Image (cartoon, rainbow, N blue to C red; front, side, top):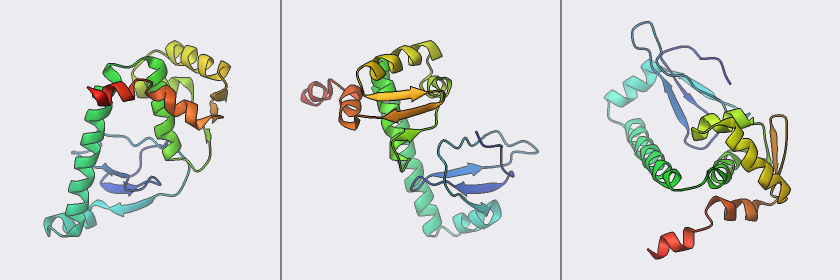
Length: 166
């Protein structure tokens, strides 16, 4: 986890189009950025971003499209997760993390995954144990290695074909 950066700054993280605003409200920044993968980040003073937004230029357009895409993803993930097992949710989250990683190794603990999915750590450990026994992943103390990407994708949504048919 990264320590909070200076308040009043906009930050861009390694994932394409990932923008995090750390906006100051009084003397407190109510949000915190958590870095999930290693890489480079860029930081801009908030006043520069605000200036561009007030001029309704291309920065505003980019931020509005980004916000729309992120809200759509949040809603879709919430609706999808509501009707899936912890194992399917784990597979999907690992795939999402892999999208941000250049390798098939993820530095993520079972507790981190449990926090991301809103479930107990024990549930993640049980699901990960089954995936490891099936030869889909291998994990050891805060590191997960994806051995079979195709089977991980299948595990994320075994009934997608029936969902699409409905």
